[in-house]
Image (cartoon, rainbow, N blue to C red; front, side, top):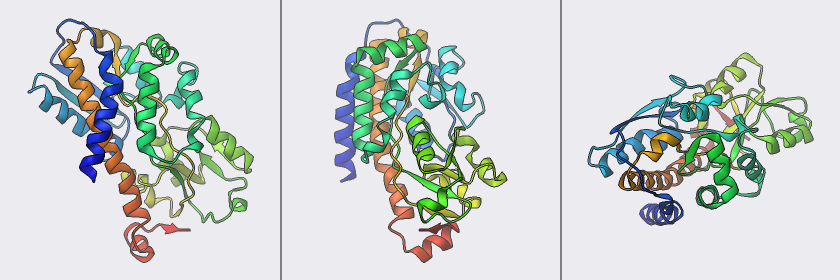
Length: 303
């Protein structure tokens, strides 16, 4: 089943993006790649660490990507600027951090509460951003080349105190991502706090946040279960806003058609791996295990 899913999504995404290959000159063999998530996070592990291995394999060693994870080179809000300015050749960027530069991408994210299938949104986001002319113009103005997207599983609430009802959220400070989620927080009487996901742990630990709103696998990937003892599995929408792989325009222009195709194929394979690994990881660890086993493993109470 996993093989069929990976094959299907790879073929689908390749059909969206392969037409973007053009004519260019020879590119350098080595490149720098950046993502602000820690290396063990699924987006970093499958989207960059394993992706780099796939690029190396498909190019027979011609393309060698050095991957920087965490905030070693760039903080979350500077991901796209770092790519544009050539600090790295390719990088991940969450569009919520640059709404003025990426208005179309942020507008599409407004529908985050409307969907629940990450597979659909990986394909749809990639299709739209690579084929819609207004979206393409947005990326050109931003100084990057969009070559593939991503989608998270549903966001959940990871809190310092139990949250069982809407009343429990009144006045609570919630880390939110995007305008739609911030409006939802305000509507239920909570206080939205727009900070990078890399700052959730410290916020919950210090008490400046009552809850982190993000994918539940962050309990392990970011060790949130050390500070957020109570998780409420309320589905709060998917997040897909921004490129999984944004390339520096000058670097991309210098790539040969063959090397561009290698990146597209590696991207498509990585998108399939993200779909297979990331949602199932959340379900297996947080939904399908007996409650007593889960509490023993993670010290998190599920309501």
